Length: 262
Image (cartoon, rainbow, N blue to C red; front, side):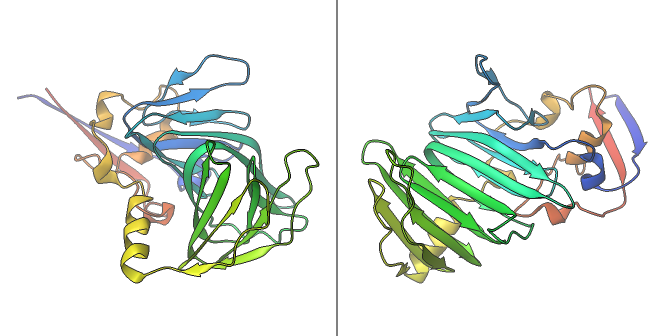
């Protein structure tokens, strides 16, 4: 068996590798995941695929993806989901993120701080608007029932109903760690309910996209050409990818060993 060993020296961290433009990288892809550019047909996604503002991420049954944005925020797109990135501005003087959850479920790990005034991180569904300051939470939307639900894993979430016709929002409900709430047909969300610890742990696990979920060896897809920064996603010869937080690889020495066995 022949082995080709290549050692690459990449200066800086993952944040620096993604600097210069706002986009995200598909760090984990399981099953059928597609990205649709504005006014274009969906294309299959793989580890290393970039996503930009105005892109729509689509997952099929038993499919999911973990996206790490250039500012270290993480978006976990769960099965049977359609999510559009409406706006993603992450600059020193302005931080504004707006996502549209058309259907399905997403979990977001928000590393940046937002004041929900001049700087916002919002997820909008047809029946609600969800805003955060810096937290981990899951948002789901069921089109058949027009119900939006929120579960908070860390920090707190500002949850408002949204009238689809008038575009008016209801008064906010604060959903804190270990709590869940839902709203129906744009009405004010219900009083948050404290989850049973066993159920909370199960939901926490089910909504995390972990490296052991991936069905394929990402080296089969290979890192995109002419973008050496993305090779940082390959941690070692076993191709262990990013776990629950982008901090696992942020600021580590940027030497990457790639071993290809034939």
